[in-house]
Image 1 (cartoon, rainbow, N blue to C red):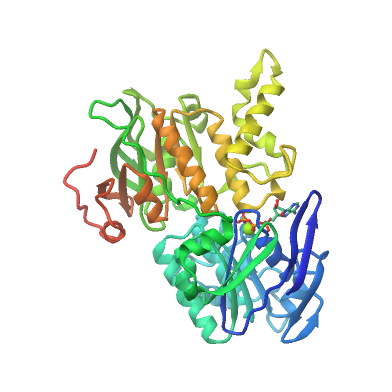
Image 2: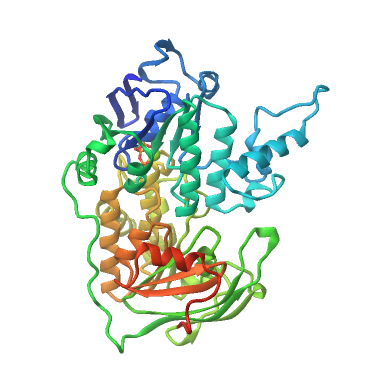
Length: 507
Ligand SMILES: Nc1ncnc2c1ncn2[C@@H]1O[C@H](COP(=O)(O)OP(=O)(O)OP(=O)(O)O)[C@@H](O)[C@H]1O
Ligand SMILES: [Mg+2]
């Protein structure tokens, strides 16, 4: 890609960026939220037809102005925002637009199913190919996207944050697949905010900042600190030590007693078995576990997402029975939930940043029937500033923000409701190191003010650094509990993979 430039109304997303990759190379593409990574790759994948600059493949200038052109050139891309059709089956999604047919022109479902099963097996995924995609969890959907890209047999494979929802084990499986592809001569361009990952899988790295090319390096030649400095433009402290706000007689905020959730095959939910723990004011609890361990289900059960008949056990809020029967009830009692699926559950992406941020909190700004517009606008602008949401202004459409900045909008929206308890599912998914640091700082500040936080995360360094306690789940059961500073990544992984409870008692 030579001297590529691209503008959107009010934003110069790329300024003369050049990038070239060799067959078999794994290139990391790194940069802050809004740096232009997805835009550059979307150009290569033909998503944008208007741009300046030239693209050459094997030395030949080519015209890529549509996804079809890109496919023709052997380019496949896993998009940052999942692009699956929820109502269609996994196999229909994988072959969408290029269905296999029998010699008589009928859909050859048998062959499509068989190939789907084989593709999924490469990723160690055993879900029936006929199951609608909407029943798959985010991590599974991410792997289905990978399978779909693999099925194209591309010679250039672009992965835009393929692992943002994956836990360690799945990431390693994906890396094995990437290594096989690269051995076959496929060039892989890999975008991720998880720096450890890049150092493990990529050979070279290209750094973008504010739409400009900062440089391309051998990964073995640069340290993590170098990478951060190049992408952020300044040195940065990644984690902030959490102040010890807890004392023995601190107030108990939330208690979960013998929580069980019956599995519901039709929704693809995993069951929970007898989960008990309590959360104090000012405490940050981390939930660790592999994909499908039940982390999300714990948060959802507390928040009243599941039908009451599927639940056993009780949840108490400050000593009073909560047992929320709906998210509305939970919100009323002072809970807020940041879900892992921002597009599906959290944002109305066709509307403005301002509308999305203040939506849940509008009551606060309503006096009789009037919205106190000035207050509302000031609060929104305040969050745009503190979380450094990169947007032309509060009226910009959320859909036009970069992925990480959309996630920040979700955070701002929840924080503005001033909850007592914050439930967070993968809160820093897709967020760059600089912005992560800001979010951690916010979390610490909230905890210091007496808020209780429960955070599910697949990123162990984040849990180890941020949490007062880490609870580990395996197949819906609590299998480990560690205080701050007690656990290592290995200990957590071990607890996450043992079925037998290593705990004598919890909670
Ligand atoms: N369709 C669009 N309309 C308007 N602006 C856009 C559009 N797509 C991207 N932008 C803007 O272009 C800039 C670069 O966005 P891009 O999505 O490429 O960032 P990114 O590096 O992928 O960030 P992230 O890590 O958050 O995914 C951002 O300022 C973004 O707001
Ligand atoms: Mg992006």
